[in-house]
Amino acid sequence: MRQIPNILSIAGTDPTGGAGIQADLKSFAAFQGYGMCVVTALVAQNTQGVREIHVPPVDFLRAQLDAVSDDVAVDAVKIGMLGTVPIINTVAQWWDSTYPQCQRPALVLDPVMVATSGDRLLDAEAEGALIDFLHRADLITPNVPELALLAGAEPVAEEQDLLDQAQRVADAHDVVVLAKGGHLTGAEVTDTLVFPERDGQRPEPVSAVSPRVDTKNTHGTGCSVSAAFATLAARGYSWAESLPLVKEWMTAALGAADELEVGRGHGPIQHFAQLW
Image (tube, rainbow, N blue to C red; front, side):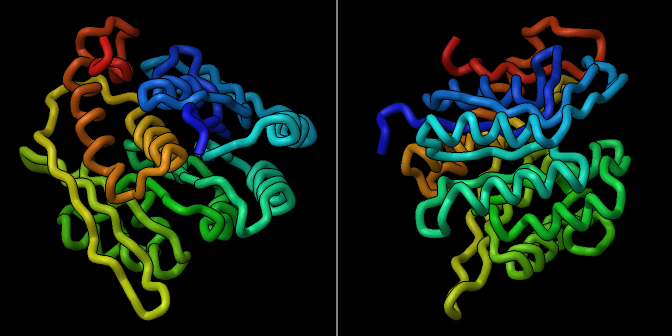
């Protein structure tokens, strides 16, 4: 166990710094990890929306991945925006060929499939390829619409229904699911880790509750939460041990988000609220 673990983000960019690899790198640093990144897509976006996306050739994506893993001992990987079937397949082939099953870094996947608005971000073929990728992950962190898509159902409004969908996905893909309650209503937000059944045993779900923070500046929360979990996994924390730490940090980051003055739309969270 390295004193300062090496964490790799595989994701798209956000030039205003609120989401994507920029948010991941801030999250890694906030939890005392050394951050690295491989770019899957160059995204022209700001706090008001996405304008254009440029996808580099997948040969170059593989070259980036190999350049990191050939030289650096990677302790955890966080995957965000993949976007297309060739990108998903390239990352899958790199992962399978680079890391033997018994020696793999922790892998956290934020399945970027559906926007907060409900708009689908992937075509049907890419959705299928990403679903096929899920069994490689140790933890996935979908939002409410994404979890519904993975479960083959409609988005829910009640916490128990959310947990039922998470359990179906966990069992189907043998992966731990973070069921996030941010899209539900109420004065409090509950996030719950749901575990798959293994060897006839299913651990009880683990939850953390926080007050809902009243702010429009929530850009990058999904990216940041998954990156934080990856860093803590690399530091030796279990998912259950990590949950309250990530929850407390995110609540502070949202609470201080309005102190930042970044853009005129939905601004970023304050990743370093606890530190600063």
